[in-house]
Image (cartoon, rainbow, N blue to C red; front, side, top):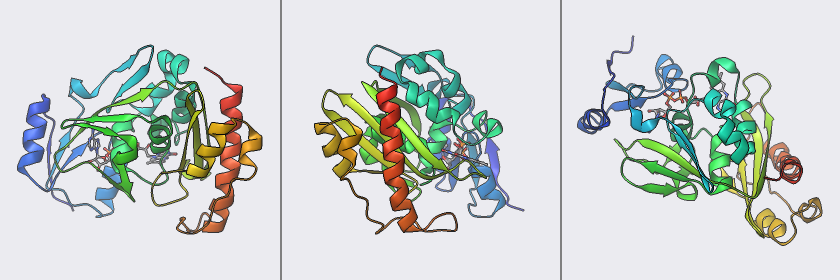
Length: 269
Ligand SMILES: Cc1cc2nc3c(=O)[nH]c(=O)nc-3n(C[C@H](O)[C@H](O)[C@H](O)COP(=O)(O)OP(=O)(O)OC[C@H]3O[C@@H](n4cnc5c(N)ncnc54)[C@H](O)[C@@H]3O)c2cc1C
């Protein structure tokens, strides 16, 4: 039996004080990763600080230029929000493809990005759209937030409050899912963020989401399938596990990119 305390603070100040006072304390959002991790004895926190009651981490705001999503927003809320669907339809598509309904109704955007599983979907959206993560301490650009396998720029006691996505001109996402879990084997997110400015983020393939600079340069010059024909992906450094070899993942990057581009071209916003 893992022995730990549980607190559900009513204010953000109380939550931060609890986390900062105890180096072994951990925040709890939906528990979709943290609870299984406890059950497997992979984490042994002394205290779980439940974030459910904190209004600062909730709410979705849509403006002419941005979509701001509270950290405690569940995937199902993101998937069904009409304002998000109108502003950044690819986010609706991505969120509705996460796992299955049970996970989507409990898992949160903040928990997903703080966990930074290489097989998670949201990191590709944040990096692909050039989002910013607002924490209790600062604003972190997505390019600097995801630092490696299951690691982020967050420090102990620092909470994700909101994620702010700029609205792209058009964008697409394709993931090759693990058919049992829904997690990403390899995925690609492509966004034209301004005329002639394209961002390409690859998830699932490597230890951490990464930008594909060769595709970005090619698509910034010519936002069409022709531009992708000469782009390459090395297998070096990519993940290899029972689901896919590194060489297979490298091939999937190119296939996912073509499909993500196809979606971007079909659904201009
Ligand atoms: C069967 C299954 C299938 C899944 N399939 C997919 C999939 O296809 N695609 C996908 O992207 N994901 C998938 N997931 C992951 C799921 O989407 C959850 O988002 C993810 O597990 C994180 O869970 P959570 O939001 O409940 O966070 P928790 O488990 O509560 O927390 C996760 C981590 O983040 C920390 N944390 C939580 N909130 C904050 C915060 N606001 N600030 C700082 N740190 C915080 C916690 O301390 C913990 O370390 C799957 C999960 C399961 C169980």
